[in-house]
Image 1 (tube, rainbow, N blue to C red):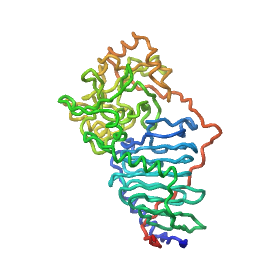
Image 2 (image 1 turned 180 degrees about the vertical axis):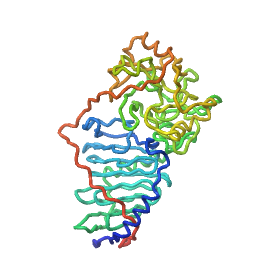
Image 3 (image 1 turned 120 degrees about the vertical axis):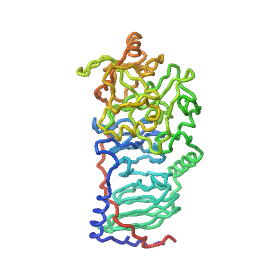
Image 4 (image 1 turned 90 degrees about the horizontal axis):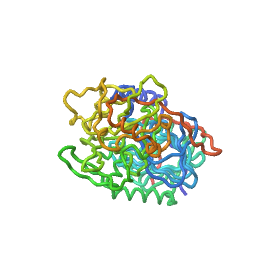
Length: 466
């Protein structure tokens, strides 16, 4: 039987010194009012999962391709499983889990586990330095690429390293957990204890490791970065073609009759971006938040543009169209059209000049000389307005979060659709709609777990693995 030694504590004076040094070095690359360029998404799952909508103060059904950012709170039913993606990083949740994304931006990916089990797979050496998982006991961080699991069992944690090197930091201590080992951790008074245990091979472990092996077989095309959230789905669901006019184009293998970009899905309101598109297709994330759409060879093709190592997320690369007075609170109809290559994206949320260049980085080489960072004052036509069926128009009252778009597009009068497709327009972003969330029966938002700061220095484990 192994002993249960207390993990060694760190001096409070060292914590003060090092936390001050860390704060001095934490200088953001962009202006403080710029939104983050990195985003998460819901990719796959089994059973029912939920998202806590802070705007409506309710739990709502969590659907595939929902964008996830700082503050996202996720709960998974007892008999369900869920997978999230943040660039090349996968986060897998077992049934009965409660997870919060406490920070997601261009510098950090910070997750907090309140209950249940989570498996985190980090493939990028650069991103590995930016990822951490926190529980009520402390912080877990990989020292490089790897795959680890943490189970929250009452007041205890069980941490397992499947690959790589995992580090645990408590307020008083630190512990290295090497690949192939599990450690159970708990607190008595102000002291953290641990004991080595055998890794679990339960149903969640089997599912999580099988999913990781499947990812090993997926190659991200060289035209896009693996840090583009959703890039792993492109080769599964489409083909690539290289063109002289637009560079590489991605063509979805199968779409429904009457398909057009930004039609088969729904809108959600996500701060700080506002209206954000959630597509129905399993591949429907990267092509709707990066790049442009072009009608080429009598079919819709997605043009990612120039490869960018860390592309910047956009809520929806569309132009809102229709000549409606911006002073009116109610718009009888709302329309939008996908942006084409050579058309800049003008964010309607707060941002600076460096952000505008970053969010358009993959397309800038194709912009006409003298392209301004400010949207044109005069009304204009967009390229895809000239493509039959490209403009989606819905009654203004129907633009509410989580309401499917396609059925309402089909009901709009042909004359109205034609006017939206042929008249020059100035982009007027509609105001937020009124959400009607689906609440989890009998479930209230559980209290957030207490978060501890990371240990300010790494101490060796007091006991080497057997």
